[in-house]
Image (cartoon, rainbow, N blue to C red):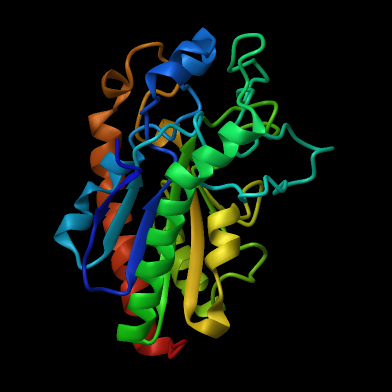
Length: 273
């Protein structure tokens, strides 16, 4: 299995979808509990929600491997993104679910050697692809915009209190993009009042956003974490495809498409190059 699918286009935007993959090698699948095999913490169908990208000049990079195999939005040294004292922490090669349940059978957790092998096999190629795409876009356009797209259940007690807003944008407290760009995004959301939104709330941006966002170097990065309830039945036990809510998705996709258009257009009147 290749680490990712990459739809290349010439525009300045790269949409990254690191957590929608569902592939697990047979040996790893057999070493997991039923919880690990179910992969419930997957960002289900986010790639499907962004399948309109082929109609634009933006690029789409989508992971094939499950985040239960390796989390592409974590640092290769497994450094924590958030304060471990305040929330459950899932690492580079997670061993527990968002509910705190074991992903591996007893004695089957990946060794340090295995983790390094997974980094080389899957993590590094994905990040090489991001870095190369952003470098090419900066060279061609003078800037690049990285939208890192995610989704999660709206209620995950071990990660956050209460219900998550519909759309959660992260710029690591304003360090990964220009104020003009994120202001344009937030204005677009507020004009579509059916969706609740927050900026730099529980999700401030993971490793991808924090590592690649460098406004001074021409790279602007924003993470989007969507509550799954706005496009699917997030609590059903059915297969993911059967949880997809066509009515909700048909409302959300045009909004996302317009958001990408807003992002692409901002540079023309802000001069953030």
